[in-house]
Length: 97
Image 1: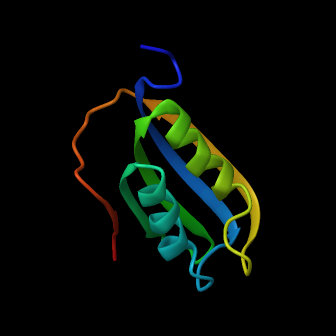
Image 2: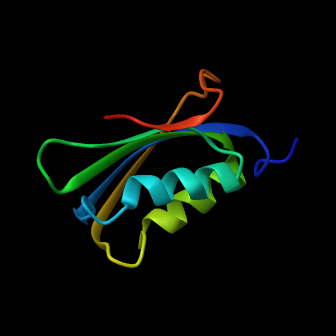
């Protein structure tokens, strides 16, 4: 299997104007379009979105690239990505509240 097709898990933190701009809903749409599973949620600081992404490396990387700018109303300042051991624990991509 190619490296781009190997399953990976990424834990990401996106900081900036990312809450109240439909970031989570749009990330869910982009993840589903790319066959990525996991979850996304707002953190209580009011300026950070956290997500866990699982899927083929190329698909996860597409979602991460989208997160660098987010939806139209977002103003992303930082994106932190940590690749972790793939667990295969998700069957869908959900928004956590």
